[in-house]
Length: 337
Image (cartoon, rainbow, N blue to C red; front, side):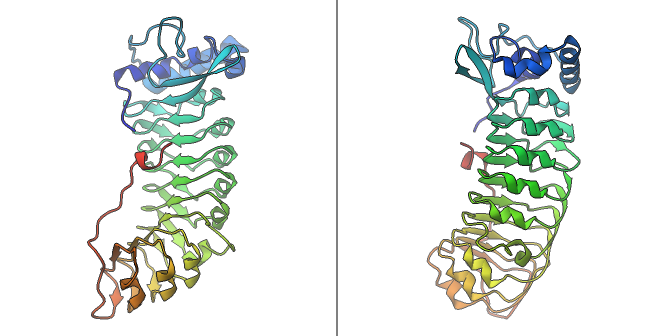
């Protein structure tokens, strides 16, 4: 997905209260229309998030378009009966500064909220749980802080959650296991601590789990202790944390696994031959741990294994890598719908 907004995006935040007025479904605006005090409070909150920037690029009062005027850039609307509602809001890479604009949570029909690559600070407000129709929440590459609010677990329609490259701390909330539609979970490059909740293994549709570059602890055995866990998981990134213990043979039950990224942890033990029975396994990163022994021959005969990186361990002499190591970085375009 390319960057669609430049300077005009600044006034989108300034116009949030208008999003809740002109020809939009009354439910969207109820919380702001009940009193002028609440409306002014929301307006001041949004202005504070942008400082005193004023841009005159958008035309008309209706962000969904009015007569011959097109919808505003970054705003997608849909029709419900005689009304139009805001369903997508994409304001990214425009250097928005300040706290997360809580007034956004009054747009109850949002299915996509993308504020990534800005300079948002402070916590995600618990009111985020009001956006029951949200499918995609992308807040990566900001300066958001505090804990990940458990209220995100109330977004039952969520399929994509991008919170990486922020300053979140504390534990990963187990409430994320309450998201039955979740497919992609990005939490890497934060300051998260504690263990990954094994309850995440009950997510039947989760395909991509990235918690790399945090301060997480625990073992893989603890993570996969629930029978039948992670049935759809294809990629798991645990790299650059403090995981210990070995690789349990039960990990081979994750039959859809393609990428297993364990680099830069404190893991030890031998590599179980059962891991080579994962038919779709394509990338295996074991480097910079404390593994020992030998690599089973089955890995070298694996039909799809392109890379197996083993540097920085205590393997026996003669153990060789497979392929050429490269950092695996997947872009939003690979996953966003």
